[in-house]
Length: 637
Picture 1: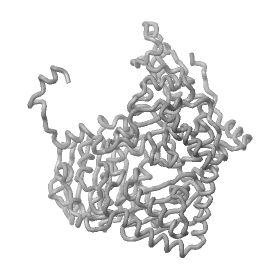
Picture 2: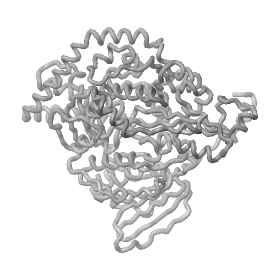
Picture 3: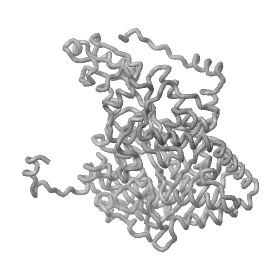
Picture 4: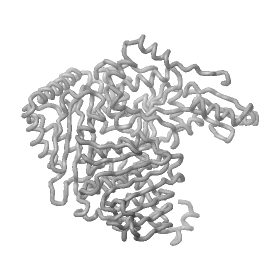
């Protein structure tokens, strides 16, 4: 602290923020990262979820079987539930007073998600328009806010005769906070569907379409699995718990976990308890001391539990911290263990064919692991020796699992996988050394399609990449939130991208399914004023003026040329090594453009890889011919 700052430090330096000021000044504390809607965990979806959760809580308490959600012009949202409606006298307090709500009373909301009285207030404070309407027994009240400031209140009035009980919230996120945002259906739909899977019988109308589930987690697994199950999924239900599990021929494990309807994407005590209990139960059933890794290899499972007064590790509620089911109940671990010990054991005794198929899969995993034992041990030793001084890795200072609670900082941890020293050198020079790591490939990686997991350890490139990511024993130990493939925008770069995606799809599909793999977009063109260059501007100083445009598509290039008219100079970037470090600074900063790699139900992994990476060269050649786009380089210098 400077002398001047010390001198000026006085009572006037200390101020108390009101509720909305604090929410607007530190939004990340309440909704995680901000974002613009391109990622499913961006803040605008957290706002939607906070509003939806209130309607879900009503349904879980037995009130209201339908929730209607409409997104208007990709910018505004209306959510209408048919629950009891918020008590009219307290409507303003619920929307604008921190730590105010009914969920402190476990008798009213026994197994709710939102317990801190914050969620809907965050939506209010972070919206340019927030209108909340409650209807109760023929009466209603509507209050309008702007950025948390109340501007209209109808008071308690008579409701239209046909108006059902319930609550409606309409809000428009503040574009000053959520820069250039828009809601994207591909991120809202999974959220809507998960709500219906976890609340059998609930109807959600989304933009006029109806979503409902009759089979709970069985429907969820069916929606998300990209390989066929080796046996009919085992579906177990009990009071406050539902579990479904099966095995596929994929490597690794795949889990979906929920608490009180909340998708705990980072797991927590319930998922840890499940993993331990399922291994113990299966060992006891078969009377064999199988390795837990063999039991869980290829396992796809979902677990949903209900907990009184749940404790999450952050306001965004992605990881359960509770150790107990409720004030008077057992621990989470004992609750899940007792349930599995009884229900899974009984199921396997009843369904002999299922038990036989499960045993075959476990034994095959055991044989594969033992066959690789020597290779794995040697590879681990090699990886350990180079890990601290990995010549391919320029590591960062903070890693994903080092961070507790700060969702925005977690989100920023990433590793760029680049091709060659030139590109990695440019990124390394201007990266954020605190949160951004760089892994440099040497040439093209091996095509791993059709190969066994042995290649992960025998191939030096893959072995070191696996070690850098720390995913040998699953993605729980992943060191970076985002794994970013940063290759050139040419044929070789695209090929390397495909080879890396093949590797991840074959051996670490959960890395993709959990949303950790991205492709970096870098500009294809730089369009700038010739006059600016003549005035002495350096060609690669990285300073973007009103006369310089970085274009990621042909349309952006055309628009830039039209703005500059005949004064335009166009440069085509075909390799990342051609972009100077200073120019690169903008492209990997807070606003870097990323395409998340998604894996959908209809994307059958085996079929996908066989077509693009298999030996059917004539079919691929015809596909390329049919989809060929000729680039016009006539205006490019």
